[in-house]
Image (cartoon, rainbow, N blue to C red; front, top):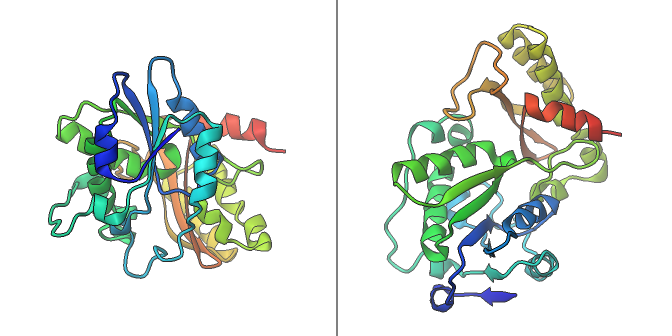
Length: 283
């Protein structure tokens, strides 16, 4: 496995096979591993980037304490047969004098865009830079960051980029909690209580499928989580392409959620197609 730390090293890598790219911020877990497995395909090279991107963190967010586990991350990449890992320094991505950023309107503005101003500017900018440096044919992202996926897909469409975006299903713990690098911030007791989040999403989906009114279902779910100690920032029923709220049931729509619990901000989303699979896996 090759490890590149500068853009010059990456550009000097002579390849003829198309690249399947998995951009990450490190602190790798089974969700990332599933993306790496997908990236390994005949006739292609798999490339993972590990970069904690400062421009997607707000001034009061967790950039300084975000888990950095590079040695372990590299070992995980080796175990999963990754061909190359790009681990740049900040100055390699944002050179001195850097003055260009990407702003995606519309889909980037509500929900995460509202609660984390500037977040998606940082995401779109770093992903565009990484795409130019890595030059992938395919890039793999996890569905847990659903709005991020929609923003990147919008950017790729708008800029006429040739990279194919693949969105892979959310990986979950055995009890249903979505895998996240931030889960490690939770104490054991808080971690046990955090399963209320996927349980709330499952309940909303079940009730909407049964014909219950959207706003009533949504309001009750927020009240239930709030009563359990969750600070719910949003819980809504949306079109996953436009990220606009919806008032009727459609099997293509998804329920999205962001909440703070025990000082940790957690996000999740779920669609009807996930419900049976999750129920089958729960103990």
